[in-house]
Length: 601
Image 1 (tube, rainbow, N blue to C red):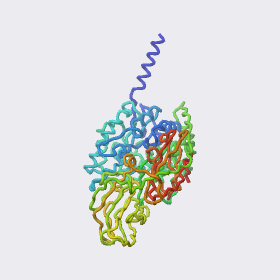
Image 2: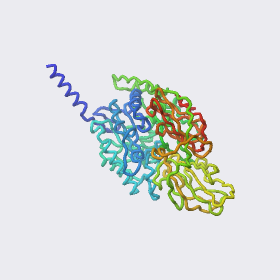
Image 3: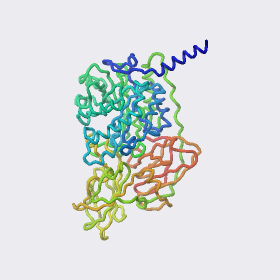
Image 4: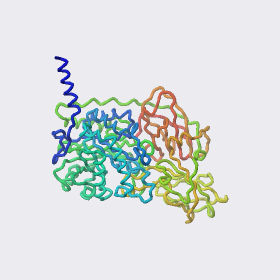
């Protein structure tokens, strides 16, 4: 009898766990399996967090009183070259969503194709820009063919994780803040159809700023419009009601922090004392919301994006964002405030989970970097080009690129580059002349007179992140048009593609460090008795990139504000570790250490 009772209970448990829930819009509220449901969401992106830490971060999100995870999907990482997809390791977005599901979280999915997010080209693949005639975020035929291929492949990964299939995905976003970019309703409707064709059958939503003209351009009939803002929620929702009433009120992004650019800028912050009151207002007035970012993480590699105001503004490597969880996933005072506030708005009988203990941190003693490899001694085979072309036209998405030509005729005067994106070092016959820096609106440099006949001109260009928001979105890297000297266009170039990827780094020829100031790779090993998170301090160095055990931690630059790069424990190992630093200005500044804190000032 006891066995029979246990069997019956087992059948009931299995049935209740697999039966599909239902999530739908009912006039001005959401219903989850027939019951009113408010979305308390936090934004966190899988690719900005080591896979080993996904459960830690998601548990902390749940423990803060949130019931939903919101994440973008980053097309350019999943399809790095046309038709070749990657959903492995930290790009396994399906596994990320399954971890969220195991913790009882619902999921808002924001698959783009454009996502903004201070991410290179707003998540659109750089290879789209190889075609000089391409138009983005509209009904351009080649663009739309690529978009559909991406969504169909994404559907294979994620369609079974929708709530209609007993999964956690309750809503899918169409595009992203489209009203801030364009007004192509045919494009938005085509995206909606592609999303459905890919197998996504849950409720759809759009997100835009809380202004009528933005909502008018960026929304669709039959799709839930949500509004994004960092303050004054009452006014924002009043504007939404003027546009479309009797719908659920959702803040798609409540900006509880802000992003940060390189050069002469302080770390981005938000007025949390004001925002606490505004969050409380949303809680008291039956609003749903998504905290952007709840945990920002890191723009590992070359993926940090850029903005354009009156000048080009590249984003720092850290995506700390002044979030409730800091870059390394540690709760801030903002986190504890949110947990206290949300604890009062949980379903009856709910006890919030305990907040997991912080990850272990370590310090790393000084690393000397006693081996080096001169960049100019480690060039790949050159490509011939009558005039310079952008990186993308040489099938290169990230890294550096060098252009070389002979100065036939005039060899001094004003050198003008149209356009140099984004940071260039200029050499004549191996002698460093100076830099051209797009962040300073520079596009010229004066070449001194030389007595050498037909000297060699070399321009090394670093791409520092494609613009991710606004009308300057098409932002090719390298030299995009031409180079002139004294008004004469320079012809017949050799071009060296330097993607700084694993394949390129594996072929570097290291020797004992020399004292030249040519761009240089430095390498050394260091030994650890234990692993833990750390911040690699690059404050003594000028400008470049750091790799630990082959993992690209991102860019550093002494113009600030960021001086330390986050290195999570999963990238380290007990015993011998390898560090490689590419320093554009060639000087070994010696002092590199690992610290327990970011030293955010």
